[in-house]
Amino acid sequence: MKLIYQNMLGFLLIIVTTISIIGYSEIGYARNQAYMQNYQRMESYANSLGELAETDEKNGTALLNDNFLNQLEFVLRGDDVHLRIFNDQNMQIYPRVNAKVQLSDKIFSTLKNGQEIRIQNNHAEHSPIGSTKDAYTGVLVPWMNGKNLVGVAWISSKVTHVERPIYMSKRNLLRALLVTVAVGLILSFIISYYSTKRIKRLSRATQKVALGNFNVQIAHKDSDEIDQLAENFNKMVKALKQSNEEVRAQENRRDQFMADAAHEMRTPLTTINGILEGLQYDAISEESKPKSIDLMQRETKRLVRLVNKNLDYEKIRNNQIMLIKTDFDAMPILRDLKSQLKQNAGKANDEISVTGPEKLPIYADRDRFTQVMVNLVQNAIQFTHDGQIEISGKRLEHASEIFVKDNGIGMSKDQTKYIFERFFKADPSRARMGTGESGLGLAIVSSLIKQHGGKVKVDSEPGKGSTFTIIFYDKGYEQFISKDQ
Figure: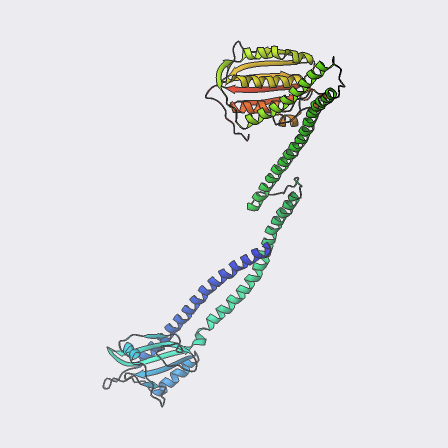
């Protein structure tokens, strides 16, 4: 069943249930009032008739003659009231009939004690008055002379006459129910249509997202839960769009890495294979063999270096390395780093400078700290030609901060977003030029610093260079970051 019909059915059930409860209560109240008023009217007639019934002091009988009672009943008949009179011997004396009519002993005993009896319907079971052709309701009122019973009056009217207002109430209730249902159908359709229309809009938007359209946004007013759902849907679509872009970027980087890895491995493998074939078929002269063997060694070391970096990164990423952290001065390491990488920087016509305080305390694993700095400086050398590479450091409160700044090619915001991810290269063309590395250096830097409880960030602008900032915190102040961050 469609939602609009479910909502309409729900509204109608509420309306019908409410009207039924109210109607049942109203009809019950009307019935009680009708019978109560009828009893009071009958009792009033009986009491008035009793006042007219004077008793004979000698024999104690009521001085009501048939002619008077016939006239009285004729008057009351216009009000649909009927009269029966019983004497103190439990004999019906009016109207006079050939058959002997009496009340039950139990009922007559109750009346002799001066108690009135109300009869709702003489057709009901255990009625004190025998059944008649038509159903009657009324009262049995004893006439007393002191403690002595003089007679009993049964004044009654037809049940249909008493229940006429109840019937009218039922008919009016039925009309109200039909009108209410009709109005309820219209209102419930309008409300349900409005609600389901908004839900259908969400459904159509969901189908578009399922087909890969992540530019869907739903307008909302923040007025109810459906608008909140629309707002959450918009947030979800934005997150899915970002995630999809991330996945595509990852796939592009993976494809680029596969191409780079294939290129980097194919070149040394082709070189090694060619030299081996030359040696096998004596195609290489004796004087050239030492150079060929030296070339094979360099290419083999290049392959080993690539494999080792991958293995090292996996160990670092999976926390399979043990950090032996100590307090040491970082400045001698930074100065040594300048000497060690001076030759590589000279090939790119770069100059390396180191500035900082006389002592720069660092709490870290000394070897891993050196590895981090080597990777950062080598990365700066790779993307800087005829430029300056500045290494500097300073103390912070409970931490030391180190900068590696260059004026190389720089990076865009999209590139800096992924720069610390595995296999990402800001300039993939360098791999084809033979100056690129594996794309693991900065990923290793990020993982090592995070395991130290430190921080790393990069600020860069295309054509103006990059600045890498790393922070190592003192013992007890590490900012530990979860692995997924």
